[in-house]
Length: 319
Length: 307
Image (cartoon, rainbow over all chains, first blue to last red; front, side, top):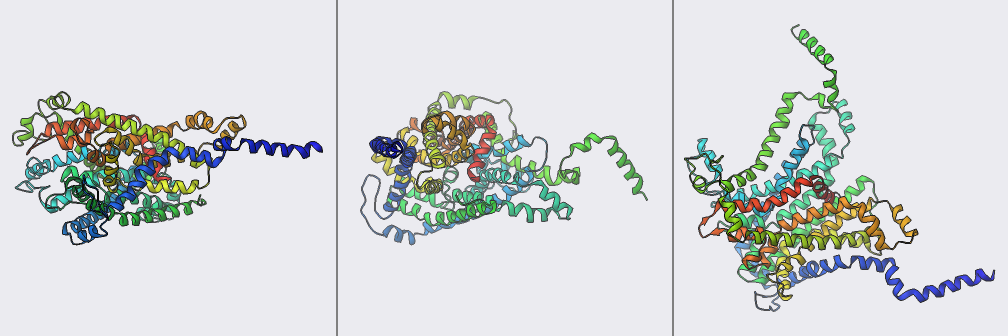
């Protein structure tokens, strides 16, 4: 009995002696802190801090080589009256909307096609993904060459088919330039949408289709009432990513048109680069890129609700 | 009446070749061959041809002699006669191209290794240590994934300048992880979750520290995930443009994408041959890497979205 009474007390003092160094090494929370340290350092110094700094810069008149002063919302007021800024917002919205809609439609269609049984399926799937692998700028250069005003292969083919008599000035005409950059964006984005949706399609159980066939469902009905509802969660996530990266696109436009002709393809990202880095008006550029944040938040909210719904559908707890 | 004999013949041929009928699995017997050609093979061929044509064009232009490039009436542009390696030779021996390739490789490997180390630790801590607030941190990292580089490059440029990293590859090695860490942490969290808890419990009972568990038990089991994360991060680095364009200035320091856009444009005349050769050589390393690891690549892409 005496032993039992004494033992816990002795143990207690031992623990107390070990605290300082031992706790830093074995306590779960401290261990977690040490393990998180490298990732957090990167994300705080090079992501969270610049994010805040960018918003701060947008309220100053900073230029390259000169420290700025706080000038309130002057940059935003200036932008409010700037026709080119509004043109870039309009371009960005059109670009995002059309490109995402077509990417979704073609991507889903391609995913459905790739989900069929056929020979060389793995090879085809690998080939489809190549546009996504190759650096965007390099494929944009290929498009630049394909859409060249003089030596365009498309103009050449159409001329030899007798459909047109003169070369189409693809990147020199405002409407054509918009169509071309949107096409290039779709071309690059479709593989991502298709392959991720294909992964979603492969989790749909074939027995559902068999049951539907026995009930006399048509192919469209099978798509509408089986495939589509089961795919909605993954569609929500994929499309959020797609919209987000289309909205903030920079490299494709920069490599193909640099915002021209007459600013017809300037997106908010390219305009902010031009104002901030080329013209040196860091404050104004920061204001343009900060103006993208509300749109991005809207997209993230959609993603959040998409994810929630997915968990609910799988019957998982929200952990 | 005329239909009957035809049906009989059909039935006989089916009965005589039972092996072929067995091969059709699932519900594919419901589809006839002509129907499959119209609804499947034709659309698929069109899409795949459009997706791959720019690469054919890139490759073709890279080996076409100049006079064939510029004279569309005499030569059919879809093919080339007397292919030449002049453009590629010029690229490799008369420009900074090998330098640029080396820079890109160096930056991509550096940033990827840094991010993988940081994300392995972070993902393990979030999934298995479950410290206070781990879920919140996981959510924040997912949000960081959604912050695009195009709203960060202006403030980052001032930060990079302040730290004296401007025009140095180190600036890219330190800033790329902000794009890579959220992605790879999220991916690795998924892989770590699939490793059974019991293995770690056994190790703990045998007296292993958390660090030993991570190195000797978790990492060997998560090798496919590590390969996926590594390849995907490497591709993202190679692909990155806006930071490299903003932070690097001198010609020999540039990465391939930036250098090709900025350096290969000679006044009004574009050197199409070298431009396309440059684009081709810049894409090849990634395509070769991709060819060896298609499955890892796909699982990386879909895994990050699914989680």
